[in-house]
Image (tube, rainbow over all chains, first blue to last red; front, side, top):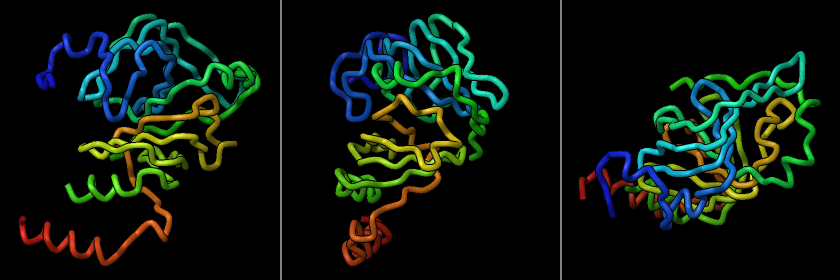
Length: 111
Length: 93
């Protein structure tokens, strides 16, 4: 099992890992420590939970208007900053009309 | 190591994980690792009117560093075994 840091371990990890299992090329939703939601295609990850996210966009929730989506592109998100990685179920995502959802933005993580 | 082993015993049980950003997620414990990262399946966010941010997510991976509490089913805890394991850890074995 490769242990050290380095970008080689990030790109296209395909083998089974206890937690992130076969999620490469899946659409995922990441909650960051500052309370942002970033949705994109998982391309790679490593032991430190650093993540490569392709075609990503941020979903901004507000109480006044519906959800805004801001296009971001190809991102590397450092593992330190990640709280939750969720598997986005495409069918469920189609059912929910994002423009109608109003909510307070998530709170930042306080250690 | 004690808690890692303990959580492995709880795989398959329903737990509620409260995070340090006050979000609470209920789900079936699928797996855990040495960092106490947690993977939950069939999740339901507690108070999902206030937190619709995970509506389209069924399964999720929660980084251990961001967990505040893990609420367990009361019958999921064998107190005697836990006591023994804790004593062994404390002794430094």
